[in-house]
Amino acid sequence: MTPNRHQGRTVLVTGAASGIGASISRQYAQEGAKLAVVDVNAEALEAHSESLRALGADVAWATADVSDYGQCASALEQLRRALSSDMDTLINNAGISPKVNGKPANFWEMDPSEWMRVVGVNLHGAFNWSRLVAPSMVEQRFGSIVNMSSVAAKFFVSFTAAHYGTTKAALIGMTRDLAGELGPHGITVNAIAPGRINTPLMRTASQATNDAIIQETALRRLGDPEDVAEMACFLTAPESRFVTGQVVDVAGGWLMT
Image (cartoon, rainbow, N blue to C red; front, side):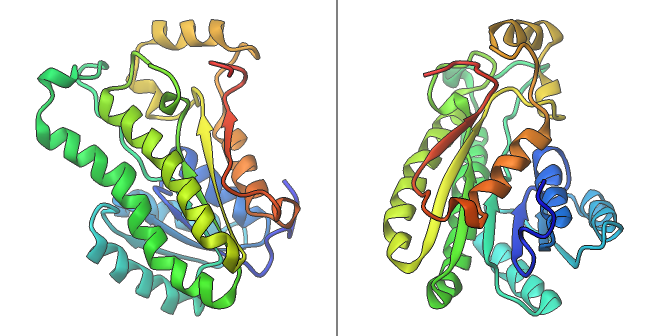
C-alpha cells in the first residue's frame, strides 16, 4: 500500500460488496481515492460503503445488474452526482461462476439461460461500464481501466464451466482492443488474471480441489484478495503509466506459462 498514491482520483469498482472487489475498493480508499462502488447486493454494498467511510474515504454506492446497460447508465449518473466527479479509474471486477453442489455443469447439459447469464455479467458487464466511462476519459485525455480475467482464460480448469473460461478469455481480447483504441487518448487498459484466491467464490469448490491447487502452486498457498488489490492499484498508478494492453497473472506460480 502506498498512502495517498491515488489522492484526487475517482475510482469505480464493480462487484465491490465482497471478495476481491471489496479488497480492491478498500485498498483504493487507503490510498486516498474517492470511491464509486457498484454491486447487485444492496445490503452488503451499503455495509461495505460504511466500512470505507470509516477509513476516511469519500464514497458513493449504487446497485446495478452490470449486464443491463440501462441500469449501469442510471447508476453512473447517480454516482457522478454524489461525488461531483467523472471516473478516472474503472475496475471491471463483477463476475459469476455458477455451480451445482460445488460442481460446474457440462456444457452439453447446461441450460442456455445459464450460459447467457454468465456472458452477460462477465463480458457484457465489462463492455457496459467501459462504454459508459470512456467518453469522459477521452475528453480529459486521462484514465485507467482494469478488467478482471482469470488463469482459467489460458488453461482448461476442471472446476469452472465453459462459460466462465470463455468469458474470461474474451476479456483478454477486449482488453487489448480497448488498449489500442484508447491509448492515443492517454488511457491505459490492462487485465489481471488471478489464480486461486481465498474468496466466497473459491469456497464453492471442495476442500480437496483447493488443496490440490495449493500443491500445484509454486508459493504453496491460496492467494489473498489483497494480492489482487495491490496489483489493481499498481496498474492504475503513476508508476505504470507506460503499461497498457497487458495481462498480469496474480497466481502464485500456479499454471505458469
